Amino acid sequence: MTSIDSSDVPVDGRAALRANCADCFALCCTAFGFQRSADFPIDKPAGTPCSNLTDAFSCSIHDSLRRRGFRGCTVFDCFGAGQYVSHTLFGGTSWKERPDSSADMFRTFAVVRQLHEMLWYLVEAAERTTDSELSEPVEQLRGSILRILDGGVPEILASDVERVRSEVRRTLIEVSEEARGGYAAAEHTSDLHPSADLVGRDLRSVRLCGADLRGAYLIAADLRHGDLAGVDMLGADLRDARLQAADLSETLFLTQPQVDAAQGDATTVLPPSLRRPQHWLA
Image (cartoon, rainbow, N blue to C red; front, side):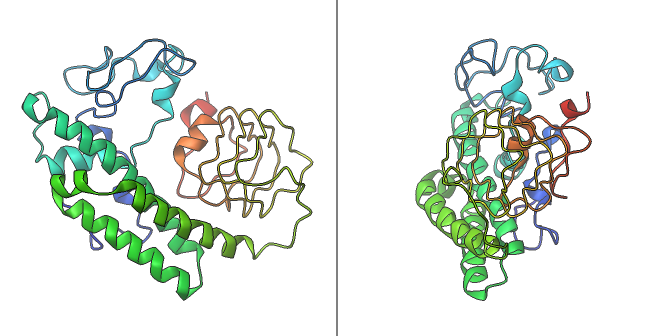
């Protein structure tokens, strides 16, 4: 695999930001730890392989993860960081072959995953904005992240991820304001705001188009049959949100992990960049 630069990324900019587990050394199954909870049935320390990991870096219970209580695995997405770290940055030599590289590999994966997620958002931001004053900082941020990634392991580990995240967040908010401004002024209730607590709320009769629900808690919220055009979902918690027959095709900053954590079915309309979760069709 080659490094991610402008020539590698196709028109929609997302191909290199999609996970390819077959080209990864099971980094998400090894680098990160988790505790027994509603999302995991066991404890696993960071830096240790999951007990379900095979010698071929595959999951021995992949087809039954949710049924066995490993829901957290089914909603994780590395945004292509796994294969980038495994092959581009570490030359296709696994942490099994070189145990002395494991610490750096796992630390690098954690950083690259965050950078790739930011790139995903910036691709959408570039698609959404028509304002040259906004498109320029979007491309500048994208370029700066790509340069960090191309700098190799030392530069990645030395990067100030929080500073980059802050700059990206600020730009995404500006793009969101522009995009949502295209929707008619809504009679949004005072409950619809960034970081709103909408846990378990029935929102079926609420006009949501153009609402700013960035960072909102929508756990188990009822959004069935809703039109979510122009709704900013950046970082919103959609665990068990009911999305049956909802139209999210024009929702802002929606990601695959959010969709995977929600409930939906064949009638849910998703953006072209996202896939329908397998468990929705089970």
